[in-house]
Length: 118
Image 1 (tube, rainbow, N blue to C red):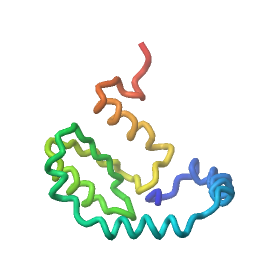
Image 2: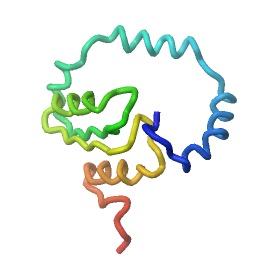
Image 3: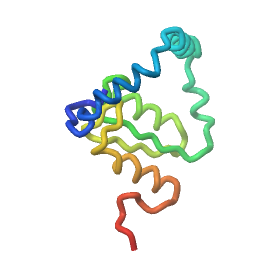
Image 4: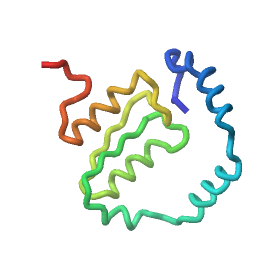
């Protein structure tokens, strides 16, 4: 789901897997989520009625939702800004955190997170 090999994240995978397994899997919950996704219908028309400022961030290598989906989403929300992150997939690898946080900070009217302190 990361869209590539990211050793700094992969080093944490065994611990993350143990924590996830320890919390337990909820098969009925996953089934309900899928049913809700497939049963909810299209939201295309409603997206055009959004009046809030919107920022769409999408990984170019996303195996779950191709980048064209992010491009389409941004085009359907009036005035939305699109930020595509090259090399990123669906997951949020550590090396992309500033490329995710800085556009969000800028969108919120804040200084970039990666900016040097004054």
